[in-house]
Structures are given as C-alpha cells and as structure tokens.
Length: 252
Ligand code: BJW
Image 1 (tube, rainbow, N blue to C red):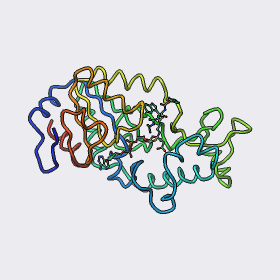
Image 2: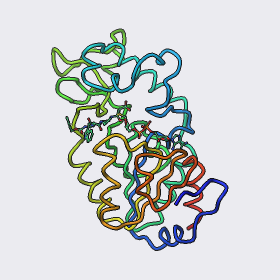
Image 3: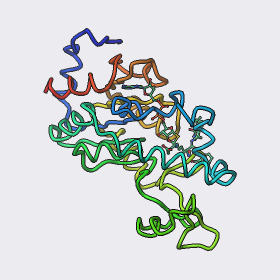
Image 4: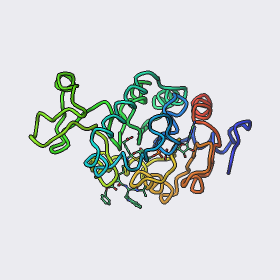
C-alpha cells in the first residue's frame, strides 16, 4: 500500500510498530540525501559528473587510476565533514531506544547514524573515515596519512606495493561475513522490517529484507520513488526519510 506524505500513517502500520519487540532496519544513501550527501545513483555534479561511480567504487577502477579514486573519496570525506546527520538519522536513534531489540543495518559509509547517537550500527559497506592498505587491508593511522599527504594516494606502511585506500567494500569485494550474518539473523528474526533510502539494487544487502518477508514479517519501505524493494513492502511510505522516520518515532 502506497502512502503519500500528506496522508497519515495507517492504523495497521502503527499497530505493527507498537506491537513489535524486535525491529530490523536497513538504510541506504537516500537517508543521507537531506544532509546534502548525494545518493550513489544521483547524477554526480561538478568535477565528478563525467565519472561513473560504479567504476570508481571498484578494485579495477582503483588499479587503473588510484589518484582519481583517492581524489573522489577525499572530495566525499570533505563533503561529509561539512554536513551533518538529519532528522531521519536522529529519529532512528530515538527509535532504537524503544524496542527490546533494534538492529540498525546500513549500507552507508558516512558514519552519520553513529553521529546521531545510534549504537551499535552494522556497517555493511565499511566506513569512509578509515583507511586501509590496498594489499593487506591493515588499518593505516591518520598520522601516517598526514605525513605522506603529498602523494595521492599515500603509500602503505604495511606493504611495499600497497597504497592507502578507503576501508569500504567495492563491487566484487566480499562483505565482512560476521557483519552480514548478524544482519541476516536480525532480518530473519525480527517482528518488523523497515527499509529506508535504498534502491535495493546492490547485493547481498538488497537480499536482507527478503529474509524478513519470507519469514512472514511486515515490512515498511521509505523512499520518494518506487525501488526494487517497494513491491515487497506492506507499506510504501512515499517521500523523504527525514519526513517519515520522525513520524514513525513520534507515533510510539
Ligand atoms: C531517498 C531520498 C530521501 C533519495 N529519502 N530515500 C546478486 C545479483 C546480482 C549481482 C550481484 C549479486 N550478488 C552480488 C552481486 C554483484 C554486486 C552487485 O550487487 N551488483 C549490482 C549492481 C547488480 N555486489 C557486490 O559486488 C558485492 N560483493 C559481493 O557480492 O561479494 C561476493 C561476490 C564477489 C565477487 C563476485 C560475486 C560475488 C559488494 C557490493 C559493494 C557495494 N559498494 C558500494 C560502494 C561503497 C563505498 C562507497 O560509498 O563509495 O556501496 S556501491 C553503492 O551501492 C554503495 C551503496 O551502499 C550501495 C547501495 O546503494 P544505495 O544505498 O541503495 O543508494 P542508491 O543511490 O542506489 O539509491 C538511493 C535511493 O534513495 C534511491 O532509491 C532514491 O529514490 C532514494 N532516495 N532521496 C529516502 N530523501
């Protein structure tokens, strides 16, 4: 059922929310859109307009043009530093306190959920603020990066052929199996699944809500557009997450 932003939350949705003990939430880039961070599939702007994010976020892209990929991540780090969590992130942090079990799973790498006070957060695709060695995936300390900032990307202290790269998961790379297992288990055993701001195009993340639906659990999808996952949802809250998530939180 599609609910538009000028409509009230349906009674049945409020009943599903108030009766749930265990809630699982999957967020994507749309949740940070109102903070001013462009979504992954939004048209890139400015200098980045002619680059395909699918290529930039890949090991092949990094091998071909490490300087370009490093620059793109530096640009995004600056953007994140200049912006802040929005009403949607804050509402999720409030919601987390209201349930016996609340698992917040995010595909985002911006760290905004933690900044808004959510804890713990299952970060499926890593975190852009951490830097690792391209060869060994060992963490690289910020001091080392500062000392080698004349090189783009800086070399790795851990391997003679290694370069610094963001600690994120690129296409073709494996997600952390423990984090993924925890996300799958939360979806399988929840009473209510909430999905917000994701196109549902990227796997295995997009498969997480399927587990809840297959287990017969109700699902809410929050997205201004119809996504790959909207058809699975009992309720598609059509509109921005910064509008709908605070409404969910205040309905409790
Ligand atoms: C709003 C809004 C507002 C706007 N409010 N909403 C099964 C089938 C087919 C392919 C595969 C499969 N399994 C694996 C694959 C391959 C691949 C994949 O999924 N490819 C697809 C493109 C088809 N997956 C992988 O490679 C994954 N690894 C893997 O599976 O390993 C095993 C393996 C290895 C080798 C071979 C085969 C298997 C890894 C995926 C890693 C994804 N990484 C990225 C980059 C992270 C770092 C970075 O940020 O730079 O993660 S890609 C990018 O997509 C990023 C995102 O987290 C992810 C999801 O995007 P998201 O969040 O949904 O954003 P958008 O932009 O797509 O959508 C935004 C949505 O918000 C839209 O719907 C808007 O309408 C909405 N919105 N404003 C609410 N205000």
